[in-house]
Length: 416
Image (cartoon, rainbow, N blue to C red; front, side):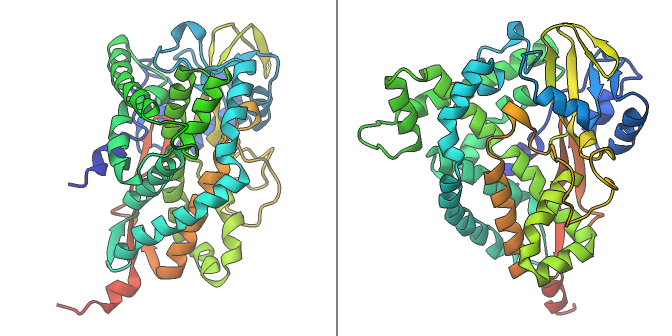
């Protein structure tokens, strides 16, 4: 058994809500194969700001979600302060505006255009290494390469030996679940927090092993120098390495599968890619809009506020349905159609505003490099829809298994 299989299964695993029978949330954030888009369409048409039976507000309007994401007066927070797990409290995601801006500024050099360009050579080499054995097979599961590429890339970026990527991936599994879970009972939370603390301890030891004087170019050395200057604390370094590690590969892994599957289902897209590599970039962004990897993010009302004619109370949980926003007809013409040349509309695949995904260009670069390589070395790919397994796990929607048939190899095999 491939050691990555169990980890792949837990990429987005989270507990289902303990809510009323009529709650819509299990169809959006549960574990299964439900298609949430009909629910999104219904909500958007009838109640774009809807209070679910579970007590959570579901926001399906692109315009209202953008308003919340761009809010600058602290009316919406990313977490309830009193419920911060101690092992996650220093993550940038959970900080107020001043600390968030400071930490984002300190992390930004990791994701600047020059840094992403430097990583592209590594990504290109990794893609070639991962695809070479697959190109010799009549069929293969792309999900394994879709996981291996981003996890090895984030390891490289953080100075961790890529050969140790599976060790680190397994160690981070419970932290992934804790960060991705909206509904947890006390026992589940305690279990995940204990596992996350083990990963924090691993990160603390890793940071402590780096000597910024002996290895000044090590990615962690820069943060240690900033620590000496009083710009960041050791716990902030560790907490945000955890954040970067976990968020650095989940969306990319799932998006690779979603993008490739859609292109192979709509053969015109795949054929266009084969004929014109320059068409890949815009199409990838459109496919990521159409089949968003991360379907929802959570906010909390910091005060009583009105949204879409509804009164939201201080402390209420608000679920921003990014998947619904990316199919909103008020923002996108014919949103349920794939238009590789689409120009209008603001995709929320990577969020928006102060908390927009800092690594979005790194994610897109990896997807584009992999797609280009697939088109180059296996232009006659076809998806095995019967064997491929789509999975809706928590906030992340994508493929647990994506089986592809390499028609060139299939046709070349002698009949028995």
